[in-house]
Length: 208
Ligand SMILES: [Zn+2]
Image (cartoon, rainbow, N blue to C red; front, side):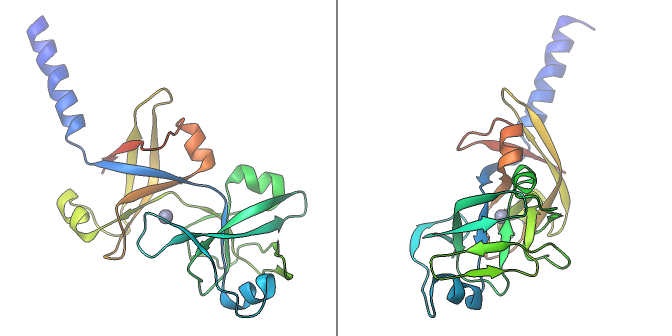
């Protein structure tokens, strides 16, 4: 192969790589979603969550309120609550957090809490022992209908996301979630964020 052929081949490869869709990535720290009656117990009857800041997903927000999450082995104070209220209380932690707490958190998509372990949550007005709801969030991409159509992907599809950098990584088994209610972002937890030396504003290439 001549030098020119080689240069052309490399150039084509780079162009192919760069033509892949770029997905903005966000890292989610440990957090709790609360259902109404748990919120009543933890913060007092009728307590309304205090809006602190909007999240990337429309209608989702971080709250001023904090809780303590207590496991059999360890605990975390000052765990953030994400609003709005949910039909079921859900505690999203990393696998490192799960080790510290001493719970076996299965890797699940948000909302899929059947058969997951429960945990103790302590607020200023009381405490709850949840029956279930502890998960390590399965990595996923929220995507608009428009982006899904333009990238030729569909809801529920399993994709990979390649990240370049000092700790270049490809995340496999990423679940695509397509909804008109979403904005296009990939969500990873802090274990995954550290695995790719995540920095704010990082983007990944979508591979299907
Ligand atoms: Zn998410």
